[in-house]
Amino acid sequence: MPELPEVETIVRTLRPLLLDRRFGRIKLTRNDIVRPAGFDLPHRLVGRTVTDITRRGKRIIITLDDANRFYVHLGMTGRLTVEPAAGPIRPHTHLCADLCDRQDRQLRFRDPRRFGGIGWLGLGPDDERMGPEPLQLRPEQLFRRLSKTRRAIKNVLLDQAVIAGLGNIYVDEALFAAAIHPLVPARDLSPVQMRRLNRAVKLTLRRAIRHRGSTLRDYVDAAGAAGAFQTLHRVYHRTGDACIRCRMPIERIVVGGRSTHFCPGCQHPAG
Ligand SMILES: [Zn+2]
Image: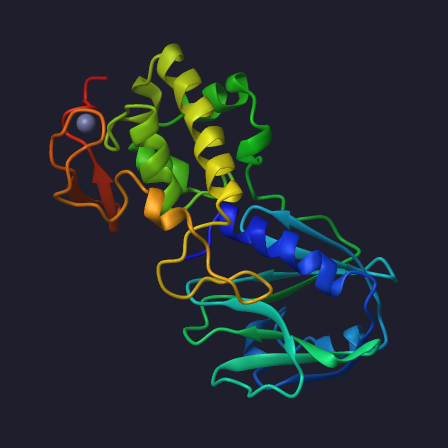
């Protein structure tokens, strides 16, 4: 599932392809991917020019020249790409938007499993239930958020209302980098551990962005290229491999229904 580094990479690769382009004919083949239900998205897009493309959490936010905004969420299998208009349209492509001034190109949204979708924000604010951005998170902000809950740190970091943008890959990698066991209750972390975690989250995300995200199955950037960070994962999907720090085999457990990878040698429950 695309997380912050993958979505950030899509935003960066989408900008040169989509910024200042005007939408022409819009073909939406599935209305149920659009929120709110029944919203006439093609009508609001046609003729409008894209003036900004940003990221908030795991969402790609596109601003139009009438100041309206909408977001694309990629869910599990979503792809948002700019492709040759003459190219074959793959199954499960739900939206094709012609770009007027580049008639040979189309913005396409494809999502076989349909956990993703497109949401209209209009002139309204971002989703206020979403937590702060991890790359801008100050240690005392993290401290405040973690010290309120006894839930396992893994689950707390996955909660988009606590911190926006993290998912299974980067939570496992950041907890390893910070040497924190995934099951430790969040409020039991010491101030030193919380500072270490805040630093580890940022370092992990920045490294992943530098390597253009992780491609496990479906993720590609806006130009269709895969990421390279998957080869640098230290624990995620590396069950049984020797830990790079202590050589103990990486273990896999299930936390909150999610596959969780950690080193039993470096990540102690007692901290
Ligand atoms: Zn280890």
